[in-house]
Structures are given as C-alpha cells and as structure tokens.
Length: 301
Image (cartoon, rainbow, N blue to C red; front, side, top):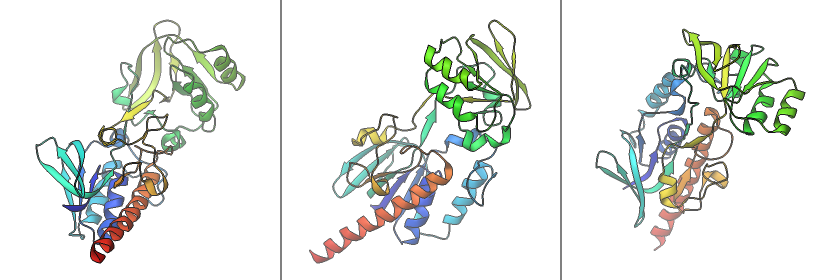
C-alpha cells in the first residue's frame, strides 16, 4: 500500500506527485493518457510555459519526476475505486489493482463537442472552448460563438473582451427574447439557422455553412456546450457535486469523503492548467499533513 494513489497524469496529478515525492511519500500516478487539451496546438496562461505544446509540457513534467524514486508512473485506465481498511483500492482496466492510504482524483473533464461536420480538423487551432486559453490568438478577428441555450449569451458577452466582431450561432434553437435583446444591445449578431458544416484549411476555420442563408466568414469558433466528468470515480466514492457538475471541494481540495481529494478541472470553476497545477500542489500538502497526523497517532498507540 502506497501513501497516495493519484488518478490522472495531467498538470494537477503530476504537480501533486512532485510535492509528495519531495516529501518522501510513496506515490503511484495512474494515467490513461487522454488529457483534455490534447487537441490544442499550445497552452497559455502558465507563467514561464506560455505557448508550450501540451504534450511537451507533460513530457517535461514527467522527466522532472524521474529523480524521485518514491514516485511511480502507471499507464492505465482506472475503472473503479472503493474504500478499504486503512485506505482505498483502485481497479484498473487491465485487471490489476493498486492500494493507497489516500486517494487524489485528478481525472479532469471532457468537453461535449458541438455535433458539426468539419469540426474535428479545426479543434484546438481555430475551434476552442476557453477564451482565456486561446482568445488572444484571435483578438479583433471575426469570431463565432456556438451554443444552444442561455449560457451562450453570457459567453458571447464575455468574448467581447477579445473581439467586437461576434456572431452567436444557435444552430436551429431560438434564443429567448431577453437573451436576444441583451446580446444585440451589445453588438452581437445572431444566426439561428441550423449549421450544415464548418469549412477551413490547414486547421484554420474560414466559414460556417448554414442550411439556409449566406455563409458566415469567421476566423475562429468558441463553443459553449457543456462538459462531463472524465471518470465516475468521485461519484462511485460518494463525493458531492456542485450544480456545474464538478466535485464540491473545500479547503486544500478535500472532499466530503475522508481520505479523498480532487484537484484540477474535475473540481472548482477556474479551469486552467496553471490553476490545476496549483490545486495539485495544495492537495499534496494537505495529504502529507494528514498522513503525518496518522503516523504520529500510530506511533503513540
């Protein structure tokens, strides 16, 4: 039984592994190898690493863990987690199982992609979900906002910080009168016709083709279609969730389940790489503190 099983080898999980490794805690990182930002050409907003490719960032992070012989990396997919005496057992798709005194879930989320023909080749270069990550690269350009409910109206108004040439594409769904009035008052155009496909070349979006009406020439599309947990381990363990579908965490990323922490996009609101790494480090300190408390109690017994 190791000190901590970390499920998820992204920024949150690897950051936690680094801090725990330096605290001489035995750690296993289980990683399925499917990070949320794997489609992106570059990640942004991370001081000293702005513009680095996500795969390069993760490779660098894993190399930095190599000197710490207490940290092990396990490529695999965790399919279940249960509480056992003195800790948790994590079952892998391979049939193997790993046991740890504590458990950190850094499994992230999966974006619900718009069901539009031609989107896949453009994802990560000119089709995005986060303006904080990719808005600067398309500043002042004609942009589209894709969304079929009221959240898209708020999203469109937020994107005005990066461009004032905006069109909200609702893909056949009629916006409410209030939402329409609000976005139009602030200069956002609305196209309600169903979308047929996206056209572009070399990863660059050029135009949106509708079932009726003229094409819309845009440089990028930002979608607002929701997300879901990448794994159901937190739910299986009985963790509470907020109304956004992410895990409800308290100070230092702890959950309502003793011994379980959740860090990164699977919890909280600010879903950025730099925030995920910080949450992983914060959770690691809390985990080490908890393990130290248990060790001291055992010595006194």
